[in-house]
Image (cartoon, rainbow, N blue to C red; front, side, top):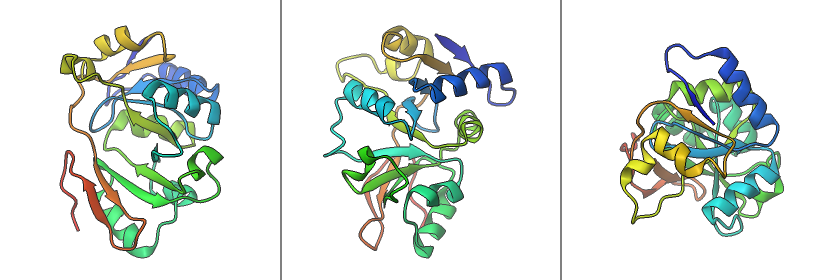
Length: 203
């Protein structure tokens, strides 16, 4: 199923359908400020396990990431000291993933690594879904075979054609990007960039 949402005039009925799917443990593909992502309600472990199988992610070896509506919500699920808070506030919303130590409020699947990625994308559609869900979204970029045309990562109609059998809904928010977020590891005291992405971190 494909639903088109416009950044400046989102249909409330469509948003309610998206929220219902997420609350029921469904998977969605949606736009962010970087690439199209696949996600689910971040507190529903079975849905997270489905995404891990689709992406061939081992949560014992790979960090998982969540989208929060704001820094206040992020602090419920990750340990954020004053220095990191100021850094995040300066760069978010934006195309960054901050790797932080987790709080016990997250399901066990995150606590295998004791770390979680925090995203607050600069995308009105993602922000509104996160706000209405009133919970974080587990998020990861859609699977991509390097042999395939890059359009499969950017065109929502092609994305829906490819992934309709494994997700419950694809949100068409326009043509997406191809460059991922900048990843900043904040688990060891001094933050350091472990992957350069769409934007440069402002210190």
